[in-house]
Length: 205
Image 1: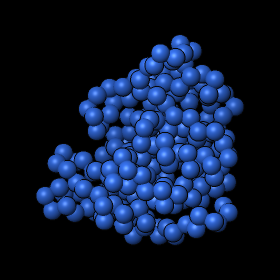
Image 2: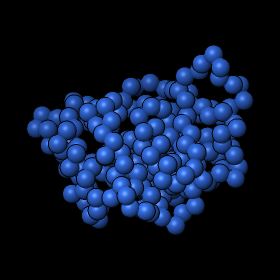
Image 3: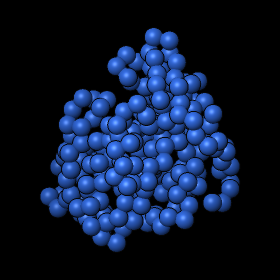
Image 4: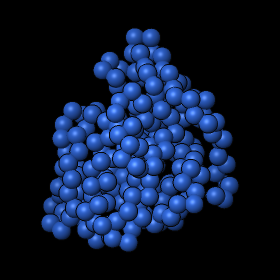
């Protein structure tokens, strides 16, 4: 069992409707040590792959992406879900259905922040049906850029997203893959993966 699976068992809460709440350490309150370990693990898994930009979607993926961008020493871009007064019309736009919020969102990235020469590593907190990942892939393709890989903190293995993305030829690396969970017994079964070492934040990767 790896560090993230242990944290999920310790602090995660399963809700009816196949919802896994990890608010206490991932997407409301942030455990910096867990984020740091995930960033180092993604850097290790994607070793040897050229990355010059990290892309995520607001808001929960930003913390992981920022620490990973720091390791790569590359810019971090996050796709926005809402228009603001200073939003530019010069942007790439895609649609993403939110499994958690049960709604369709338009997500966008301003064109200057994605370029045809970019080799982009996508990072997000959850992968369920793959809607957010496909929206980010769409934005990258609109820019003529390349998807270097997809790093996911928690994949819901019982849903189609991971299998679909891998079947499309994308390299998907998920630190924890949930095979099944039961809200009544609060039990989770993880897909077995190769053991992951706890990363030393002072280790140069």
